[in-house]
Length: 265
Ligand code: KIV
Ligand code: NA
Image (cartoon, rainbow, N blue to C red; front, top):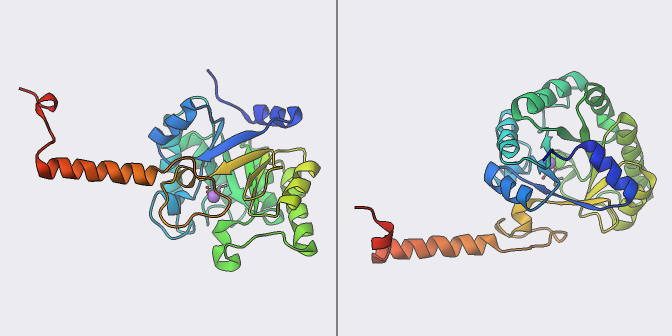
């Protein structure tokens, strides 16, 4: 078997096929999703909140993304793996972006990278693509800018909608193979999806995008506390794991684990 490629992704849009994407941060989880047939996995910097215990994605480093991305690549054989460029690893300009993306491609083995920003990031996208690194763009709510914009719906109102459309066209013109639309009104995401020839990947962007992405710990009910309205929980791993840990603890304290069958002589 070979991995899915960005050409397969382009062909899916021509055929009008929708596809799913999940985040992954470790080899074992990634191997489950790979065996389940998830075609594209994102080693998101959401690892900051969902895997590494930070409050936001802002503190995540390129070293951390490289280590996590390498694990996901090792755990998979079929999925296209996209590595997220963390805050501070591409904002200085195209050359810094190329240096950072090259690390993810060479050291971690990802097939593509993702970075945030539309018009503001088009020079970075262009150089990476010219250098042979496929780029997934990310517009709308961009969590690395939380200190400037908060976590609010983007593209509401005529002016903001026009800016989102300009951002979408800018990343397509720069050569991005796909674009994430995060937390934008469904009607606007549908319009962007019609206008662009590259696939849109929605998260909190309604039903009309070409693809859908969810953060795996949200999707499987592992995240503690409240999850956003746009998340659908397909399992409650937090309960499953918590109950298993409690049962183990009770067995140990009560002397019912290990039993003879778990022992060697
Ligand atoms: O880091 C991440 O998980 C993401 C997705 C939500 C698109 O950027
Ligand atoms: Na991200």
